[in-house]
Image (cartoon, rainbow, N blue to C red):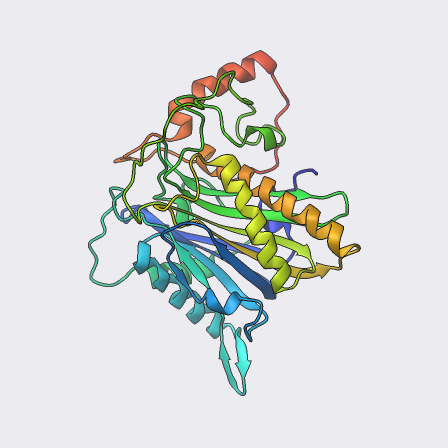
Amino acid sequence: MRQGPLNLITDVAGLRVGNAHDSVLRSGVTMLTGDRPFAAAVHVMGGAPGTRETDLLAPDKLVAAVDALVVSGGSAFGLAACDGVMAALHAAGRGFAVGPARVPIVPGAIVFDLLNGGDKVWRTNPYPALGKAAVAAAAEHFAIGSAGAGLGALTGSLKGGLGSASAVLANGATVGALVVVNALGQATVGDGPHFWAAPWELDAEFGGLGLPTAFPAAEEPLASKRLGEATTIAIVATDAALDKAALQRMAIVAHDGLARSLVPSHTPLDGDLIFALSTGARPLTDPVADAFGLGHAAATVLARAVARGVYAALPSPGDLQPCWKAAFGQAEGRRDQRTAPERSPRGTA
């Protein structure tokens, strides 16, 4: 398993991601679409989800493919970002055909970022406009960290953010992940700089610090947020040809990636949710073995994406939490001086 050339979910050929955010609002929208509709599924493990049109992703439902997936800040207000995405896609002639009518299918999920210090007093809900802007910005290259839906994200101790990562498997399949890290739990171990996701890191993509020598195993975590304030929402994608039932299984297994990178995860106070999608471009060679490998890859790539989202977050005036680079950038510098590794240019955004 190795990184894709961009180390982004768009290493899955045919996918594009668009970010739009407002620094005064301290919130934003991230939208994923493709060259053509794609099969998708979803699995929710958190206790406080916020979603739109996720029921139609069940394997027994009529619609076989969707036009886009949306992850947004704004709590329930942010679900309106799907309206803006739908309007932009409809104008482009996209959508599920019912006679002469076309209806873009755009499931979405939100994180709660209403108490992060941004100006949330508005006359008109800003999220539909942000959704349209995200469609206009859609491209293979996109920013991670403090961007899009991750702009106002917080975690248990550090600023959260938008993360992404990818992997190319030995059988040639590509798996990617996109995640908004707004968790109740922490991406780092204790009070130090080390990421829980360190065992899965590739090419020093989030600092290359490895794991600490000791873990706070006996500590009992305290809830730093209230009910409904925390959520980590993600998309995992592959070019392997999976139907909706297989994608639902992939989404279930991918939740292991949240457990590997956030402590605690899947709490009653989080709304943890994962979409899974397939472009269907690469036929399976062995349905059992390939599905097994894809699930493992989705979990490891998602764990890496979580760490990358926190690692890439940037400081801004009025922050309620420090970002990783402000708190621990010197630790990374000492590591660089000690080992002087050659940094890969991949994964920059």
